[in-house]
Amino acid sequence: MANFSIADIKALREQLGTGMVDTKKALEEADGDVEKAVEILRLKGAKGNAKRADRATSEGLVVAREQGGKATLVELACETDFVAKNDRFIALADKVADAAAAAAADSVEEALAATAGDQTVEQLISDEAAIIGEKVELRRVRTLEGDAFQVYLHRTSKDLPPQVGVIVAYTGDDAETARSIAQHISFANPSYLSRDEVPAADVEKEREIVTEISRNEGKPEAALPKIVEGRVNAFFKQVSLLDQDYAKDNKLSVAKVAHDAGITITGFARFKVGA
Image (tube, rainbow, N blue to C red; front, side, top):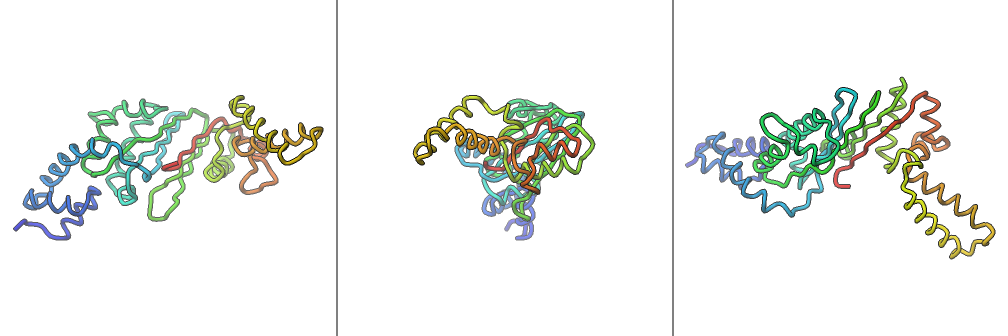
């Protein structure tokens, strides 16, 4: 009879994030030797990585790093919330974030090629996925440059690691307001910093849509230009951070809040797990 207990199975499962049955079988095969069981699970997992390639990764976490005038935001995805909150997965995310930040990676491709110890991030993720027993995917990476940064990581559940992450790059001295704007971004989900960054084709498409809607509503033709412009401005307030109504006081725009605080928002990044 194998020399291990239920407690040993539970401890190893929590350490690796592996399934109960696989963990028990590995300990049986290793006759209770934990290190050998880990190797068995690693080899089995490596074979399973290819089989898991098409699986969905709707869980995971976001993590951020600030280093040398740059800040990096990373989304690491997995299949289940059980793995997302596992210590091994969280430690993996930290290693990936450290490597991505050191390389100032601004894309998944750059981050995967970055060095993590004596291997690449891509190899590290593959090795850890083999042990964890789920598909693990580096979904998004963004690095911002700036004079100062505020990072806001939001937990959508107290039992899970952060699943919404925001970095705000700014100039000025009011860190409290910059952090408040980062919190606003986590809620309001703007796509662009300012209306000037919205692609002209997107604006024109929106203009065509609201013009047709206004006509179908029977609005007077003479009033259409003003009505359309109002609706296009409403579109900008949805997608442009500086045009948005400030979450803490909707009588003010984010641009007004930043101006009054003496700060200038120069960039931002926002990731939400699975979105």
